[in-house]
Image 1 (cartoon, rainbow, N blue to C red):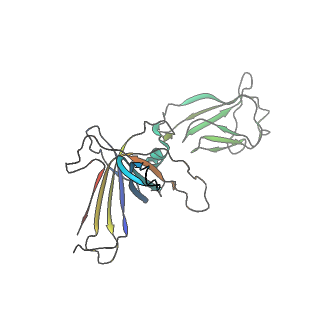
Image 2: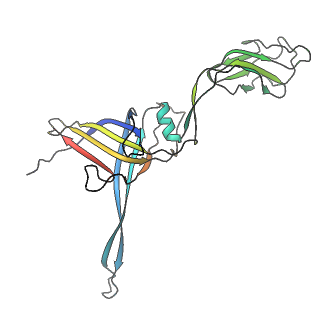
Image 3: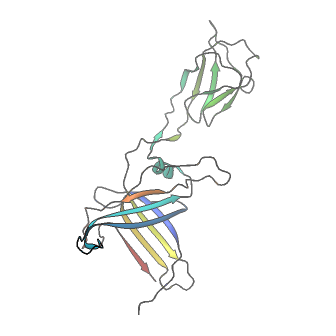
Length: 260
């Protein structure tokens, strides 16, 4: 008789872009995450019309739908790219001179964007005719260099000032993600895990899924009472892999092994 075991799984999920050859590129661990998968076979039913019961008389098998759902529990750039179907851009570092950040004279409390991240050597000038006046940091404005923005805190000291306000600064080589700008890549998904049931005879579990096509996340929380994380599941289709056959070592959708 085959040994029956309980199963309580944990493990690591790895993702890599699927190559045209049907094999994966380099895989990366997504961090702490949850995963589920399943198959939904569709069938067409024909009912009989003579018994008065309208019972099923024939079932014809149809297509099979396969889905895999991953819930990212950790926030990092690569997971954010997948969840937003984004594209990674590295910001240029060419110094910016005289970028207009306010067309008119702002008021105290206004936040003005520099339209760059990770800035340094920031200078803010007004448009006084002849010789523009330079605003003083931590007197006239407060700088958030990481976010690339200033907050106006006083317009009396050193004034009066004249709009427009212009900024000069040096951006750093910051990477950012342009959301909904990617190509909708297909991913090879690998699970390498263990059965945590004490005394399990087959504790080692490995599974591969060849073509996972996730949609963008429907919801994402950036402000939470507790740990902020990409906790919305990405339920994407598992597509049949035409580079493989039902009779080879892979099969169309995936494969899994349990080992001692």
